[in-house]
Image (cartoon, rainbow, N blue to C red; front, side, top):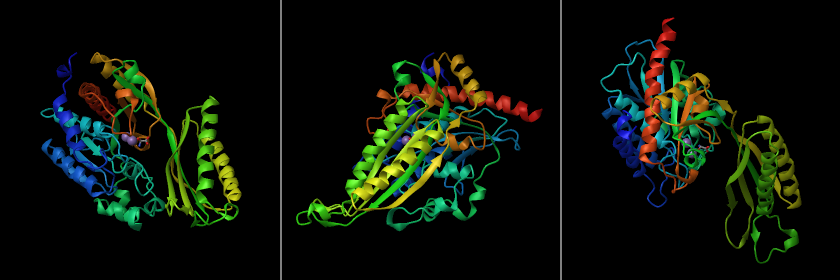
Length: 422
Ligand code: HGY
Ligand code: MN
Ligand code: MN
């Protein structure tokens, strides 16, 4: 089946993806960090596209941008599709964005037809780990797990997350209004961010489960000193303890990954060194560790090992370990089997190949699964690369995944209506 027979407009989808790609920090494409003016520029652009597609647009108190299309039955639960338009620093043009563009195209492709259920297209706030240390801010809010402690997190310029949320249109004092009880199903299209589909080649991945993620922060404090005159035997170099900890993270993660008890990876993506002069002995370091697994017991094992190891490295370097904290955590989540079957049948009907696939990346769908049946459609991306400017997906692949979702939305509209009727 040619892309033009899929019932979606590949050029419209591509125009949205490339339109958002143009709204980036020019000196480090592609960057549109949540809560920044650039992000708000992207949001305003997207809100206009939602309105042009005939959607009623609002921002909920958790900061999610929601475009809603009424259904025939005013009391019916909504069918929601979406993802996120915020990026990692120097990230790609498709992670999250392809899913929002797919949702928008589904709304357009349904123009002129009436569903029993309302359709909602959602751009979730801050899916990527934000500069306040928290990811999935909007979907945590929609699923009722955005806590006061999280809102107290501090970001750039000493701003609290709760104030940043207010700045982008949310309302931290009325988060309960964002908690949804009226969503019947959630579907998300996303690039695979791995090599399986491209190497198949396979048209779509039906996600079986989404990995659990825990982010840890470790702070070491020693004493800044003159790099030229401070004798080696009295230095209290905070970077020495941090560097040993980074190596321990890699070693322990390789050990757990090789143990064969489940999927396990760990990464140190942030290492801050202060004061940061080439001729100054580092007085303070901050290490942020990203830990992912399908088996929560492995995380316990990992955290205990790094806790002990980092204390030992601090002692050996004559520095203090002043912080060892969990910034965020979420359990592994299974995608809904019935929704996956609907997606599988949808792909089959379109003559598209499909395979089951677990997700090593986190997604808003993991939080939406707390409030409604949720499932994801992966599409191939070049060399499996993501979180880098080289990230790429073919227009036809995005269109094919969108067509699978469109057909599934129409089928769910029939199935959910039937369930509500009985
Ligand atoms: O980090 C992740 O897995 C996702 O891309 N936010
Ligand atoms: Mn990402
Ligand atoms: Mn993503």
